[in-house]
Length: 175
Image (cartoon, rainbow, N blue to C red; front, side, top):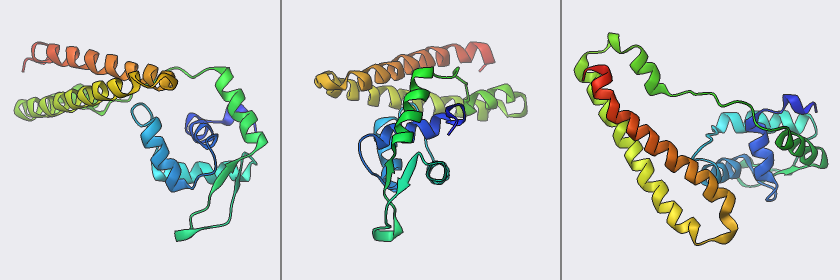
C-alpha cells in the first residue's frame, strides 16, 4: 500500500493493533480509552478502514466469533506502513470546532440563545479540564505512561486556553 494513502484514522487503528488482535468493537473501545481525548473514531470509520486495510494486505481478518465479530491482526506490511506513516511526521492541524461555526453565524441567532450556547460550551470545557486534571494525577504516578501524560497535558493546556477565550467572549460578542 502507498503509505501516502494511509490516513490518520487508519494509522491510529494500526497503532492500536500493535497491542494484539482486536475486533472492530474492541478497537472503538480501545481508541476511546487510549486516544479519545484528542482523536475520535466512529464505528463506521473503523469498519470502513478495517475493510480497506484488509483488502490492501495491512491486516488479516480472523474467523468471526460471538456476534459475528472478526478479530483483526496487523501484518508485516501493516507494521511497515504504520512505521512509514509515523516517521513521516504528522500532517498540519486542522481546526474543526462546531462552536466556531455557530459563532461565525451568530448574526442568525437570537442573543439569548447565543449566550446559552456559549454557557453550555464553557461548562463542557470546564468538565473536560476537571476530568483531565483527575487523569493527570493517576498518570503521573505511572512512570511507563509518559506518552499518555504528554498528550493529556496538551489537553489540559488546550482546555485552559479555551476557558481563557470564553472569558473574552462576552466583550467580543457583546453578550
